[in-house]
Length: 141
Image (cartoon, rainbow, N blue to C red):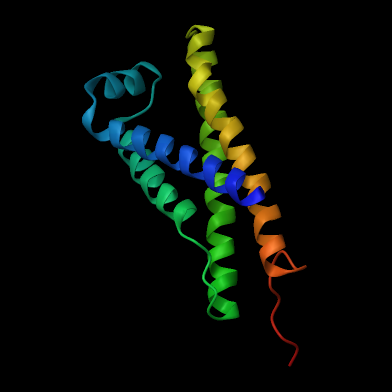
């Protein structure tokens, strides 16, 4: 069950982030909204790239070959979750501070629930798969 909740929430969230990241490049309405919120145009491009790369990082399974690769992949996933969480909370703050209606918080709210579910079940799923250890440790020398 953990596997399905993890992958379901992760795929939905990654699609949501990839979709919004793509819209940052192609939608004039999105560019206008960023300008209305007071953000420079280059920030929209940077955030779009980060969202697309983050979606790929979340959907990439952890490697089973070698300790160093597994540790690196877990570190990248942790930072990806942190980056997305900061981005979502910042979006909620920006919409609230700019006087947008409460409905503007709906999509960031859904994204927050999905990322929280994905992150929580990520640890449960990979802990179960690893047996006991959540994060592999280097062998003693």
